[in-house]
Length: 140
Image 1 (cartoon, rainbow, N blue to C red):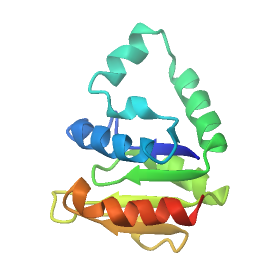
Image 2: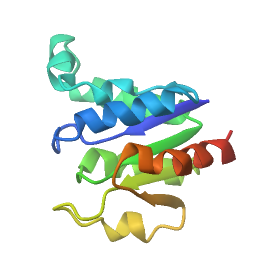
Image 3: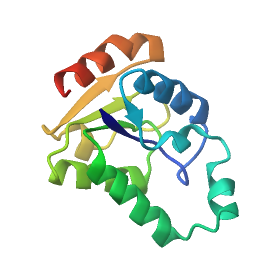
Image 4: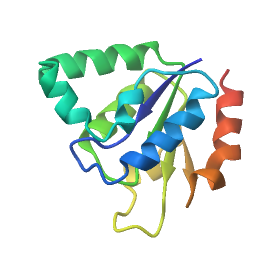
């Protein structure tokens, strides 16, 4: 199973460690195409590799097309994550969004109100693990 994991990069990196935990969990069930999202220094590495915004867009869209499922951590708002979710829904990919209520950001109605998106609210990775694994099993 190919998994596209999405999380905020330019919108804020305060959840990078959490992303890494989620990516590690997802990697137990398949190949995470976007494991770099959990790297605290992802932007510096992209710059060092000479990746343009166009390169990043094209690579992400290619991975999104390849993915069997999309899992997005949406607590920190991100235009890029929203863009990826829109494309995934349009392409009828199974989408699971993870959201931690009680943070400074309210979840967009465009995510919460979308019947094509499975929303899992959680506080810890351990607390969402079984529901996330059930989502992955349903879409094998």
